[in-house]
Image (tube, rainbow over all chains, first blue to last red; front, side):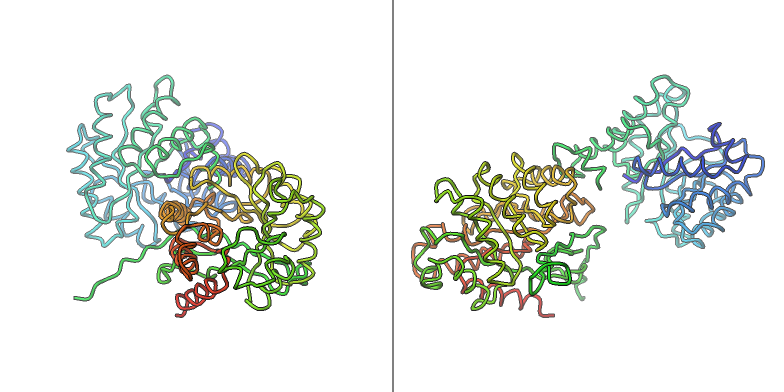
Length: 262
Length: 311
């Protein structure tokens, strides 16, 4: 599982304040701690509170890449903000994200190619969030077709079936799991699948339990990457155990420790 | 149409373990032997790096050989009755890369020699021959815990390979190996889960995974060779995919297993064939060190390795 740590995000009060005050230490310690917990990459988002994301994004990128060479996942709905982040990135990058809208794909696919960046495509478009599996797959197929038209390497594409909160759209959860399984069959080479895990428990109680239960189900459906809170130890334990039970790692009595030694 | 070979690329690598310290590294060995370092499955040269060919270690005991096949006796002659002469003939006449000293005489049922006697023997071998050493206990856990620490200390700084740690008995040996600058053999009973667990237990004591060789426990041809083969293959696949806890070179005790088969006893030269075939099969599975007995079998295998690595 490719784990993208979600905690450097301006929607958290501490991070928002650190961005505002240009406090590198807070950001860097958040980065280090996520990596220590098992993050393979770090999501970087200025959050909606940012007054000047065009400046905040490159500052965040510089701040984080000063202490790690892990991939950075530049998270913004505004292509211009992402472009500012890409300009200063020395680390590998992942663009988070494009929707299935042609105008956005036409902007972001060339940008991703130019910077040899990976790209997350989420299955929504201007019409809104899909209501069922077929709509999700249709949007995924559109993203794929556009990527192929732009000659974008499919191994660098991550499709996100857009996870909905269980207390908002409970009936869509099984559909999302089925979508994950079917996304893998859309292309050869197989396209990566990704979810923003914490969405599933947005506004709900028992968030950690919901997150880890859904993650194990998604992993069993074939999910290979997720944006999540790597500091949630029980979540990581559940993930490691799920992958073990799926035969992705060789069992030993200390399998949790063994995974973390990797 | 020309057939296109599909080549796998692996993210992981087997660790390199160096046995034997020369003067530059504080030891007195004439050479050191590096094993491991592969970034591809065995002999798939096009898929990655295979920097170190498999190496053969000659088995030598600390007491005159007991119950050895006449074919072995005739190959070594009187030397089998004198451990130091036995060690020398392997190093000088048979040009061994490595010696594997088996402290069989310390076993309570085979002479019960004292730790001090064993250490004295190790020391004498270090004086008499200059190739790197592997030191193996008698397999009696309680006695090994008395004998091996003293031998480890006698060979301090010589970067030996010492064994064997097992899941129920690894702490004493690990502590000695750590203190005296050696590497360790981790033995598991044809069980990949235990092999992995034991490596974790050993590394938790502070001995790095880069100083462990896995003894997967092998059977000779016709005696479970294929079980060992598949365990080794699975471990190697996992290691190359990135599992560091299994990314250790393998040591295989080919001689002792081959010469106890009934086929080895049945007809002249059959033991040599059995030992040769067991060793060459295990090379295909990824064996890095082959501990062997008959010099002719060792010669056959050594020639085979040279052919495989002629590129």
